[in-house]
Image 1 (cartoon, helix red, strand yellow):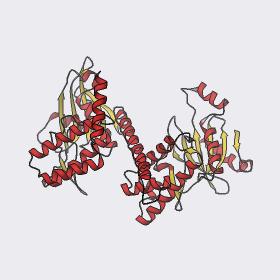
Image 2 (cartoon, one colour; image 1 turned 180 degrees about the horizontal axis):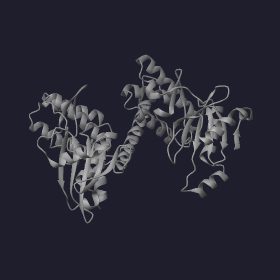
Image 3 (cartoon, helix red, strand yellow; image 1 turned 90 degrees about the vertical axis):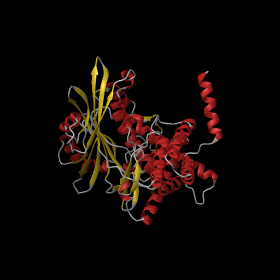
Image 4 (spheres, helix red, strand yellow; image 1 turned 180 degrees about the vertical axis):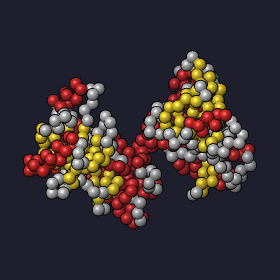
Length: 466
């Protein structure tokens, strides 16, 4: 065992813990993944708990890791130096105790143990306590940035709340705050990670506390808050794109399977026999599933079958918190590499008969979410989505997943044309002018369609065509 850095007075107490860690004994594993970092809790002889982060060597890049160690740029060394600098700057992070290299060649970083809860769990409390905690978290992030550092992996799991006080953990990606863009990136990541936990006003409170903005907000303060919102939305789009790409590979949620001569992916919670039953199209089936079969087309050779595209789009919708029918499996039948036929197995949802104005409000909310998150919906405007009755009210959900394309960002022209097509369908269905005007106002408040922006889009399109 090689002692690389740390307090010599702690060495005698830490050595027995590290020796047991090397043997995999007498530690409580928090996370242990093959080929990745492992996290554990150890106990010193006097009963004091400590946190152990075990860095696993990468067999794919041994020379790169060797040079990083030679140049003192390895991940554990950088995290040790970062923790020491942040502690010296007064930022609340766990105290680093030691950096040790085991006889196996693996590096271990030992820090004090913080007994707390992740931020999202701690925020489930009364409004008064939640607002006070958000202010403290914002102050902690502001102190980090004022010290000249950016976290670069700031999300709800990396903020621990111990006895009502927030702490920053997982410092391996921390870097110098070279540009204001890194500050916005931190705040956008944190805001995005709390989108399902906090209401929009609470997220604004957190943004304001992190930026030291006081109410009432002037125009400059509003611009700063909106900049964080744009960074959060950009993070959401990257997350949706990543989730969509990963959905086409076997993983924790889906596995590969073969059925009726075709291959595809199936939800791990679903039995393959249920898919076989759905493909048989038995009229007496009562398994809560419905089947959609699609013929192959010339373009499917390079863009994928319709079922594959629908499966991918559904995962992008889920990552964007947009209601949709959940797909449970997709199957492709290929001939010489070309998908000649595909099928999508989905949950069968109960449809609800709602008043026209309630359905209009639900659909307006859906299209705001789709356009804001960067989804194109070619032809979906003319086919009304199904309206579901949920526990907390009515919501419109995307039912035809094959008509949804994740673009990441829509131009003002695309949004205007899509919303106008939607309005034409509403008018044809007999919706009153007052309700239509209210829906347009809701959409414009969230996603303004300015004449100047439309002209810029038209000019860009003309330049592109030249």
